[in-house]
Amino acid sequence: MTTDIETSMVDASKPAGSVPSPVARAKWKRARFGIAVLATQALVLAALLVVWERATPKGSPAAFMFGSPSAIAGFLVQMAQDGSLWRDAAVTGTETLLGFFMGNLVGTLLGLSLWYSRFVSRVVEPFVIALGSIPIIALAPIVIIWFGTGLVSKVAMSTLSVVIVALVTSYKGAVGVDGDQIYLMKTLGASKFQIFRKLVIPASLTDIFAGLKLTVGFALIGAIVGEFMSSSEGLGHAIFKAGSLYIIPKVFAALVVTIVLALVLTWLVGKIERLLMPWRRRA
Amino acid sequence: MSVEAATHARPGQGEAVNGTALPLVVEHVAKGYDLNGQVVPVIADLSLTLRKGEIVSIVGPSGCGKTTLLNTLCGLLAPDAGRIRWHGRQVVGQPQNVGYMLQKDLLFPWRTALANTMLGLEIRGVPAAEAEDRSRAMLDQLGLHGFADHYPATLSGGMRQRVALARTLVNDPDVLLLDEPFAALDFQTKLLIESDMVSLVRKGGRSMLLITHDIEEAVSIADRVIVLTRRPTAVKATYEIELGSDRADVISLRENPDFSRYVRRIWADLDVAIQ
Ligand SMILES: Nc1ncnc2c1ncn2[C@@H]1O[C@H](COP(=O)(O)OP(=O)(O)OP(=O)(O)O)[C@@H](O)[C@H]1O
Ligand SMILES: [Mg+2]
Image (cartoon, rainbow over all chains, first blue to last red; front, side, top):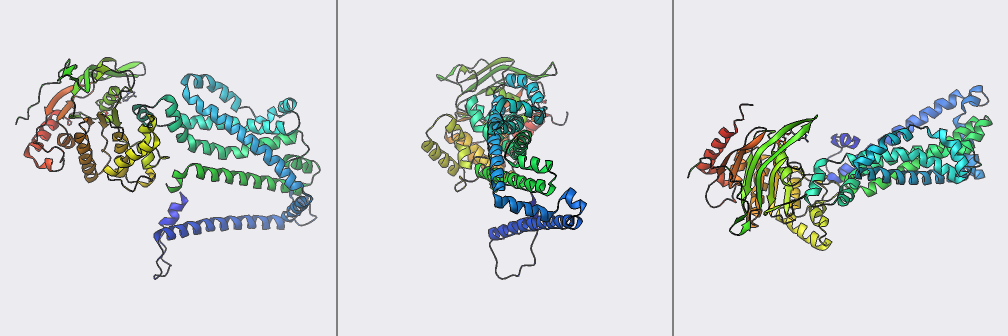
């Protein structure tokens, strides 16, 4: 981990005299490392924005083709003021969250329960691979026919984008459990269900959370693709509409909101992960 | 005192000795692995007995099938032939009251030392409060007072193996099957944990079957040492270890002159040089 590198560096610049406790020092070093990362990221972003702004002066063809940071900011302010930003973000956020939740719930439950039977998992395997190779976007027209043009079809698209990935990652986690740990559980007299509950599920959590982080993006893409197809609101709708009117900075503005949404959701998953797996914090 | 190889384990002696069945009787067990359609024999024909309160060590060349033997004994693998009787009875599945411990501590990283120790009691449905009390007491007994709420990642290798031992002993097993449980530890730590373990086993009148690579360890701990041949394995020789009364002190035992004589004899039997 990066923090290891940081904490292993000896800080000789500190004056002797006030000797902080090792814990406080480690904490300070970790915090300083985090600040350094953030500052560098901000710097890189600022540099990109400056170059972009310089290359796209107001009224130039480049500004029309690529937008400019100031124009994007302008649209963001305007969208925030007329309320469409919040409305669209809320709509897409709701669809994404519902799809993310349902897709992961169903996928993880199926994936984990495949651990129970080698037979069933072997039977199911080619079907899972087949389903996993379908581009979800190809399903969009059918989904809209089945579920209409409202919220449900977007949630369905989002769920479909997530479910196979969740299934595969959780199944991988479940079958990856150390055989000796299963032996141990057996010698302690555990039933198959007890092995499942006390060993397989917690041991798979790392993989499940890796899947959750991965599927935040997929859920969002599913929702937005659904909105592209037919909708009257949401970030996908905003992007589609601005795009077809050639208002490129507005496309970027909606994209910025989308990115922020993805970051917030990923951050939330990380928070829950740390809450559910406290043993990893100290490791 | 003679340091001669005793007769081989007597098969058929399973039923009653003084009216009670022996904890473990193994008769003519054979086991092979199926490797690409071919059966590779690992255990050729193996018989042994474990008496109540007895500590038996098994030594054998690397890869001869010691782990396979233990896995077969506790029902994790099915023998191809032969009989295994626990307390006079053939068991389907896992035998009761048998503790099994491996070289890997196999602690669950998501459980604290205490919760890891409680695992077996929890599985058997012992009420949580009682399970916790017993587990805490066991951790204290093994010198882990104050570490009950630590996660395994924050414990040293020796402490982790002590937690694994606590997890085994807290279930109050009659018989312990140990597969090189301390092989990964440094010499001092190993000696300390071993002497703690031996005194707990002897005090409780439990029986123990200990697999090891370390002949000195085998001689210092066991009442009897069984030497296995190379694969396909069988019992090559059995040594009754007679080293005086205080067998719990595994450290001072090593100064006994007979100790090194046993070690040399067994070492010669193992013929490790010829591979
Ligand atoms: N699951 C398996 N499938 C096929 N062969 C196996 C399997 N497990 C073990 N073997 C083989 O059986 C033999 C005995 O293995 P085992 O682990 O029982 O030996 P061991 O005496 O415990 O060795 P060590 O002293 O190194 O621990 C080895 O040659 C090994 O390759
Ligand atoms: Mg082994």
